[in-house]
Length: 253
Image 1 (tube, helix red, strand yellow):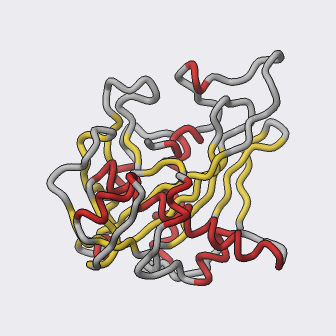
Image 2 (tube, rainbow, N blue to C red):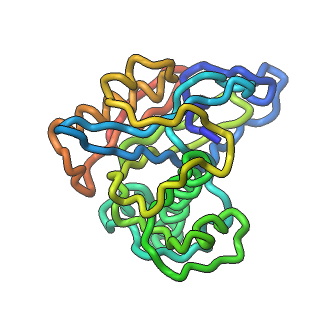
Image 3 (cartoon, rainbow, N blue to C red):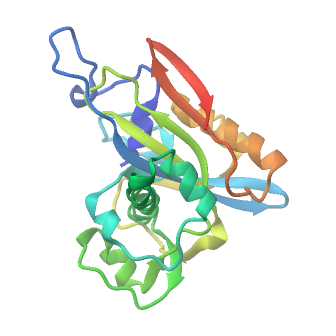
């Protein structure tokens, strides 16, 4: 669903995404969502998987995006072949009081799983391990059909961004990354038509495409991190983009 793209500062393009006016109801609480940036190293250069939103979409038609979308309640009930690296889980969960630490870790796992589910739905790539995986969740039947149990240990936290206040729909998006070799199955075509023109692109080329402002920022952040840390070491600080007092801000988490 590419919900992460609603994070672009000040951009709303559809009636459902228009900003509140003075008569609007109370502010909207951001919903969890996640994006997965798959990385394929070729000749020492990182390529990333992106697709173009279909021209018929009312919201940002023709924009290039990463696979991603909102976290679904069913994501919290999926068993995994491997869990998030503890340092990554802690970063995604954020600071939590002792009594809520378990809930925070479960939330981090669900957020990460939503990135894998959306990557399958939008790009036809299943990240996980070959296994006898079964679930009652309709959203996860694709993994069960292909005998893939989702695996989270190869995911790395890259960035976080929250849709600015004033939008009818707001998202708290975690940008995650993984190497292409974490993909167990690559289907000839995805099960949905959310994205078209799906391709592996050098980061330098992706930056020249028609992308949203937040996508550009994350691509730049990722490129810099890969230069100094090509293996994406777990537990590294990540940039956090948000709006406070009407100003767009960047802090490190």
